[in-house]
Image (cartoon, rainbow, N blue to C red; front, side):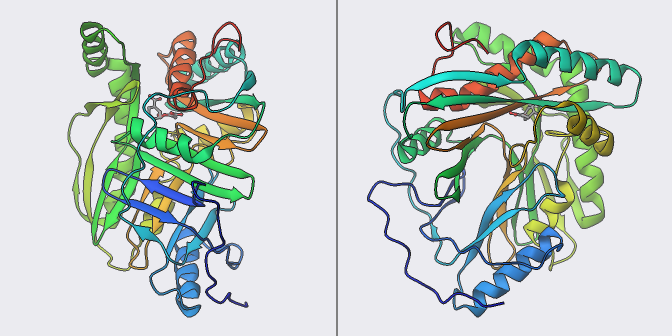
Length: 388
Ligand SMILES: C=C(O[C@H]1C=CC=C(C(=O)O)[C@@H]1O)C(=O)O
């Protein structure tokens, strides 16, 4: 394989978006230049990471990091790039004070439509009631047709400003195609031997009236349906981590946390890895896809999604993040996100379905989840654009 010489970063106009941007509660990372190095086919994710970091080091990029996105389907190829000169610790960009429409949106289409999504949830509920499945996460994609290209840097600033406790990211997939979003969900972070995770399942929309809003949070915390759905996920993650870890702390009950316009049930997990050679990408490979985006049992849920959801999720409901030369890093679940081209924005939202799910409520939940991105875009769905 021929390796690139370290080249100066290509010139980008002032104010344009860097090809990789990351703002988490603890880390910010920006890469002005990304290398797309070839990796032998068929390597497991962790080995791809080791190979690429070694190749970067051999090319002279000693402080390089890996950044990228992993698709929902673990059998599809990951997008992993070398950031030869990552810039750490930059301040978050100031968010524009009020979200203003960043581009004219000509039309909005949901695939499947809201009605078809309810029918899909009803079909899943029937399968869940037979006991074939315990939980399946069903998604839909919203297509926004644009009158002109979006200004991406202000959009990312808006997302970072509106979601200070979340994971705001932007990754250039091709010159005119970006994956970006503000995920509330930490799949896993690794610093030395310590892993931290904050899986989520269980949702209520937040409300403007403080009393009604507090009642939503209390309702979520007491909801047997949501607590059971959440417990399925935590049990699956505990089972995956246990063989890798010498210490594993899993709280017995979830917390209610605020994520922008939503309340979620979340369980903060801390663990200590047994094997010092294990990298964050090795752990991502074991964990993904968790029941926050797939279901329980994993294989049956994956099959149900593949058979019944129209279209392929691609990078939606995957994982996005970075890994440094020590194998440390942070990966978020790729939700509350969009793929953006100059002509179109595609947004993803999914909801966990269990035997007790109500199709109309799950549809409303996906509509509420779309609002993280729609709010940053300044887009108000309604009569003119069509309802969600
Ligand atoms: C799949 C999504 O959310 C996940 C994360 C938090 C709560 C979820 C839920 O309550 O269903 C989902 O599992 C999404 O935002 O598209």
